[in-house]
Image 1 (tube, rainbow, N blue to C red):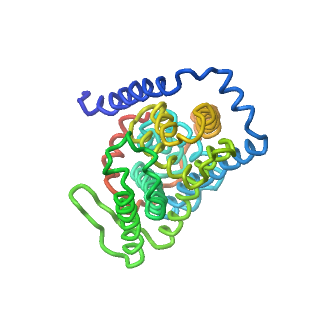
Image 2 (image 1 turned 30 degrees about the vertical axis):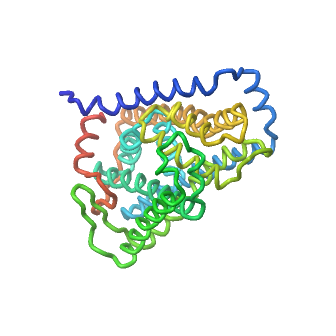
Image 3 (image 1 turned 90 degrees about the vertical axis):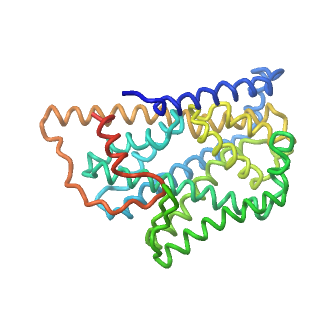
Amino acid sequence: MKTIKDFAWPLIGLVALVGSGYLLYRELQGISLAEVENSLRAIPHHNYLFAFLSTVVAYMALAWYDRIALLHLGVRHISWLFVSVCSFTTYALSHNIGASVFSGALVRYRAYSAKGLTAAQVAVLVALCSFTFGLGTLLLGGLVLTFNPELLTRLEGKLPAALTNPTTARVVGALMLGFVGLYVFGSLLRLKPLTIRKFKLEYPRPNIMVRQLVAAPLELLGAAGIIYFALPEVGNPGFVVVLAVFLASFSAALASHSPGGLGVFEIIFLTAMPDLPKVDVLAALLVFRLLYLLIPFALAIVTVLLFERANLAKAFRGNGKPDAAVPAPPIVAPGLDPIKLEQRLEKKVV
């Protein structure tokens, strides 16, 4: 039976989409399609190439997320190629559809269960991948705010004055780095799990933790690089500023549960880039959506169809038996119960 909670996040996403869409419409009034086309043509060919390579780096790092989680689980029999295709499909779909934790869980369950993983193991994998992304956001965000706290002044008038104050920004950055430091410290010393009410943090082995601290920033740097290379050289605020705005925009887009962060991502970026013509910023964001979201989305749909077709063929031949499952260790990520997620997966996955 459906409850209010089942409709809460879709409703929040719809409100965020409508609200940000209205604000985006106001921001872009007066900009014609011809102007956007001219801005896209003005981007040098080699910058398009760099933006494409940045996309490749981002998705390779995302595949590393899955690989890291599988290493934590002790699963080594799944090839890098399978992991890369599964990860690419998962993120391409979840970035566009929204609700990345659960859409990611369902896609991964279909793929990894065919390789012998249980629903509980998939829950651990999803949780650790999500936490790795959050860890990278905290690390890069903390570094940016600590060493360049004036960045938030770009949002003056859009946020409360206390939040755009450089002192406040530096304090927030220090707290973010403090959380990362606690995680590193706990992993190195193999401390007992940290539990605060429903929040539970169990520390992984140091070799897993180090991989997380490399993979997550690499993915975010790659994704931000797409926009950086698509922006014009004249007036370009520099990679650090683009990275900071990207972290804020992408995090807000994910939190909004708006499909693909549509509208939310753009309005924050346009607001935080007052030194550049809006049409040039919009063109760069279109390049980002094309390379990081839309093209991967189309490829992911084809991949899912081919995967399900292969599974159906196996079922007709009667030899579609998965490999033996590997025992699952305790979950290593905050706030996600593998048993509850397993129950949800069993209900939703046929």
